[in-house]
Length: 93
Image (cartoon, rainbow, N blue to C red; front, side):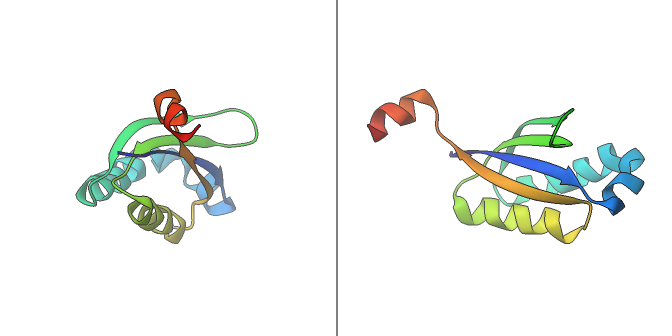
């Protein structure tokens, strides 16, 4: 499955709701698994982004649904990156 990195920045609402992040994240990932996705890692970060999520999804449409689902909650603004392994890169070049 393709790998994706989601770079998340908290909105004002997300900062106010920071204490509930673990429970909200669990709920979101349960729904993501129902779409056929797999969570690889979910990290709170320091710096420009507040969280980084690494996932696998069957296709771009699934990750787009996931990103829309996250955005619809109003707690974060996201940027999604498609990640390619070195083996995949070998196939590209």
